[in-house]
Image (cartoon, rainbow, N blue to C red):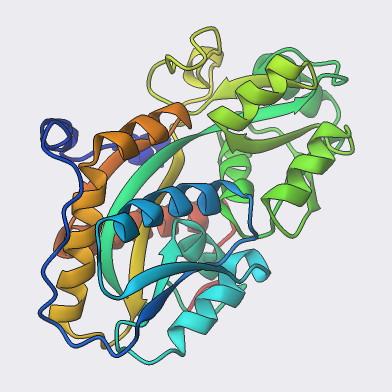
Length: 328
């Protein structure tokens, strides 16, 4: 199967871009009965990670709008995001608990690490997209993906890849293996921070990260970026070649969004859907996300549900093809 199934980065980007020219966040009307003064926004990864940073920025804008209840980011890391996801899955569907989610909720299910996936929740809104970068320590002898892959083919299993097992950080590298017929050695780490520490220390040869992280450490002289999984070069790092330019037909990244416990009432979903939509139209939010190499790709609850189903189907097909699939 062609990796082109991941090319659809932004459905409706033009509409989103137009909407961003509108006024900033305004306080949404609350018609639903949400029985808490403060609702938990569960980020199922540790504080300081990419998803945590994105959600704190967005939640601050929503709270500044006057939404009732207020939202509080709560980090519940562990198990590739599944510890926090289980917390939300078992929570009351009363609007007092939400979950930050991305493709790891799909890939960990496909890898057999958990027995539920995105459809165990009610989609609220899709928010952002961040493209994936492959990087390594500046001590690394390689300079680009071609050199990496040539080494991996010549020495099967010698190239050390830092991953969080079952997550998107492993999935993208499995796709690279499949596309190039190379063989990697996977070294597991609990989360992004631990994986990044290993990359910087040259304890692994490569790992997946976002573009802003790569740029930061490249400027410090402690990291190299070997390729970005986008259709075209990213203006944040215009000298960084795409994977396609280096002979790897792959586009990949993270779509971040919000879901609620299964059974949450539609009027409650609407309150949060409206709040997140208005936050995504806030010029200050857009500017801050742009600076972090993250794009706004807002979708409402219904469209996000359709997107999630397609994303799951596409990932499942590839997982079966590359021998990763262990789901039900």
